[in-house]
Length: 141
Image 1: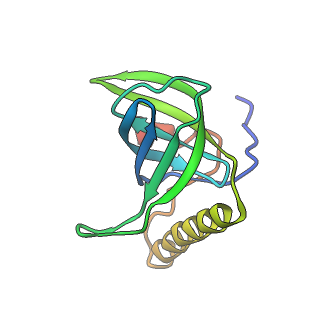
Image 2: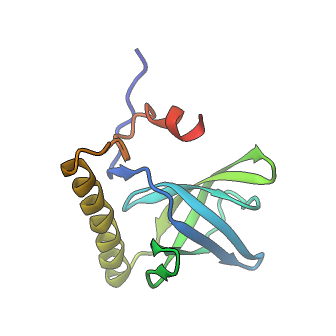
């Protein structure tokens, strides 16, 4: 039996619009999962491990409604080419001030409330990732 990875923060397997910004310009991305400590995402271009670009995260409420972007600094921990010009990135949030942390916690509470409502309605709440990697098959097919 494989060892289970212990995570410091619960992860939520959810797609959120993201945009990395830095000296390289802007790179569009979508989260794979997110926690209060960082995120994994797919990006349209490679980003170099060790760099710390700004990332803007926006919740999509409907086709025309989005949240105000949450702007954070994220250290690129790893970057893996996935084919078709896509790259998977692992990021750790850095330099969080009180306002950023509060907004991110509100972001995550909103996600948790959505999962709870889905579970109460009899939906599948498997979008909450326990950090073991067991859900990766659903994400990558």
